[in-house]
Image 1 (cartoon, helix red, strand yellow):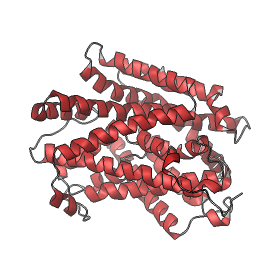
Image 2 (cartoon, helix red, strand yellow):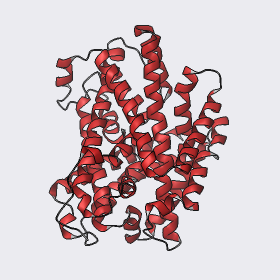
Image 3 (cartoon, one colour):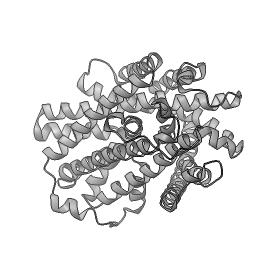
Image 4 (cartoon, helix red, strand yellow):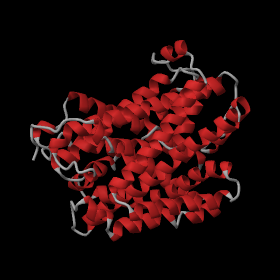
Length: 415
């Protein structure tokens, strides 16, 4: 089982962390961070850093479970009781249906702005089909390379833009001091918990296994991979906040809510710096959005295949077998084609409510079940939680419970 001798961490082997970070940070996260900069300047910079630390704790715990036990996270959930199936089954089905439309629309926005030869819904459908074809015909190694290219585009574009707009160094340093401006409490919690935090965090262990890291000898490498990836995510998010603070906060420019806020920013960039800078940003916008399509199409399909495998009594199948399974490909089709109906019509209100409630519960579910599993005898003693891990997961769990309650209350009030 767990071995004390571990493989050396190497830059050359980094990959699964890049994949989970690129998947988790999508267009919605970019908008949330921009609006933080627009409304509060540099004041909430500290919250983005705390958010990255929370994600490092969650991803490390997920990867540690997979490597220490040589079992998947869903196998761990199943050991807690069949109630996990009754939650996860409806959630992953409804989530996939609504997320598919959201992801396709987000990827289509920059393409429609750059190439207005097709309507938005057509670009969205093309993005979904492109993701389906790529994941269907390629296994993890090629998928990881594509994700690395996309996150490279995201990183260079956004960080380069932050440098270009010339950040206020003094204000940046002051932003590291934890402060809560008036009216920012709930927004700050959302910034800490939301950026990069989705069901794909639970997929990290599956990608760790797909990389060929199958046992505890890879623990050191996994932790290095995780820290580097979320370190890059932190730099990326800070860069987005700087752009919001410098271009929007100082000039009192407000963005539209949702992914279209990024098109507003592209317009501001074109007006201030010219068409070239705007186009470069739209390319980065597309890379962020399309990386989420590829990541979800691959990672969440692996999770669904594992879920159905457990229902059929086929547990802990090799990742390569799951990638070729009908469950994997069936969920790929589910993510792609049924959501296209939502691109043409408004989302059914009741379905949106179910999606919101189920989704609000997922991050508390992940944090608290990891806390439970990694303190139990299901894990070899040397890989169980220490004080730091317990504190990190407990803080994450409490944070997500508060955010869950706030989101559900918002749906109740909205109803």
